[in-house]
Length: 258
Image (cartoon, rainbow, N blue to C red; front, side, top):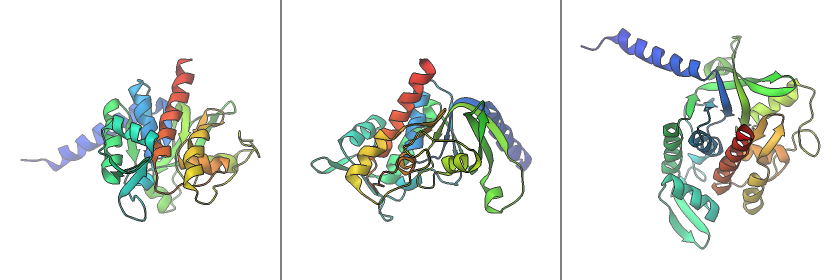
C-alpha cells in the first residue's frame, strides 16, 4: 500500500538535498533556453559544478515554439555540427539550411546536460544579483509564484564563481544589475545597448561575437548577448544560440582552469 506522506517526504528530502548541494557552485545560469542549456552541458562535461535557474514551469525558451508555433527549427552548418554531437535528428532542406524538430532538439539537449551533471531548477526566478567586492558573485532567488502573486517574501542567495545571463530578450539579470547599481558595463555606452529588429544573417553571427563577459564575472549568452550589445534578433534559426552556449562555456572553462 502506498503511503502519501512517504511520497511527500521523498520529494521534499530529495529536492532540498539537491538544492542544498547547489548553494555554491562554479557557474550559475539564469534562463533554461537553448543557449543556457547548451552552456550547462559543456560546463558539466568539463566537470564544472553548474546549475540553471528557470522562472517558468517549462524549459527550452523560444526553441519550444519553433517559428510562429510551428515546432520546427532551422540551423546552419555550425549549428548542425552541435546538434549532431547531441544526437538530434536533422534533415537537409537546402544548401546550408537544416531543420530539426524543436521538441526533440531541446529535450535531447536538456537530457544530455542533466546526464553530464548539470542541474536545472525550474519555477525559480532570479530576483537580484549578489555583488561581492564590486564583482558578480551569485544570484538572489525566489519562487516564481511569489513574484507572480506580488507577495512580499524575502529571497535566498546562492554563490557562484561566474554567472551567465541567458534570459533572452528581457535581459532580466542584467537589467536588474544596471538598475540597482551605479556601474558601467563592458559595452560601448557603458549601458545596455538594446535589441535591434530582425536580421537573421547578422543576428546569427553577432550572437556568437557578443557572447562574452559584460561585467566582472558576468557573461551574456544567446539572445541576451545581442540585446545587451545592440545587435539584431534572428528569429527561428537557432544555430547561433547553440554556438553561443558552447562559446560561453569554453570562455568560463578557460577562466576556471587558467
